[in-house]
Length: 442
Image (cartoon, rainbow, N blue to C red):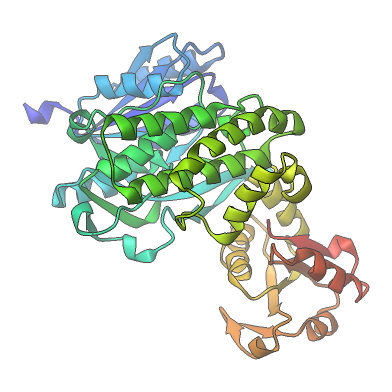
């Protein structure tokens, strides 16, 4: 009987997704592992998504279409879970793509171990000058989390915080633990609650250190770029808190991680909102913060010094964010595209030999080199720390700023230090370097 059932069910929630839907479906239909079912849940799309689905279903009998008038992202996924016949389930957003061997790689590992969750890294993708390109993002910063069986009872809980689509989940685990996606209206932040619950309730997990999922970051219709959705993050944090209380979870480390997630999400939200949005969101932010202070959240080393200072500053001054925390465009891809415009096919000096400089070398350079007919020539690193001079990073020597300016008079300088970028920019201007030859990493 098992032979007649799919091993893996892929849930594709859809709502007015015509722009990227074909690329999405091509990626899942073309998986190297074939024994899958593809459950497309359309929440009343008004564009050409239904006709695209119909055309693909005619070509691939593994596709199942569920029409539902509810536009909630969480509702669509939960409907898909209920319908799934596979041993494992995955989620594929309709503007994203699976890497061609995602299901095969992850499911083969799930057959070796009794895994509740198996996942990998993400490749963030976007279009630049008509070409799709991207870069890999690690789900976990600590390399020790990868390529091994993780038994949760034997070590601290590892938190992914989102990225629910880069994993497969054992369906019986989700059913036994009654884990669902929050069914708030629309599509915004519902992955946070699902991710948090699977992190704390899964008994076993395994993560491979390679990209398995391609996540689009230049879709202006994405929920994370919608300034109209001001309070959705507070709804999701309330959902997690209710779940923790209803499940009678008293583990202090779990609660501390929740507070950490909640208020870093609030701070990030404040940075991305317009002034109108900030004025609306501040009331909810302040109300929650004053309520949660009773749990001693600012006295438990939950936050670092900078984060604690932001929360304390906001308590003392309602206009703290306007005065001290700059607006941050949530469309990260705009910054990357602007950086590419600045460095493409030009000699480059990286100003800053720390982690951000190394990130530029390993990530942005790869993006440039992946574009047809394009490249970026990294000449060297320069830094203000004399003790670094003469050392090298990836074969590129670290020199003084003065030497870099003299040796490479035509180079573009990429400032790779968020904390001191203003001073570093003024330093370069003193060498009469035009602003058109100065760009920033973030």
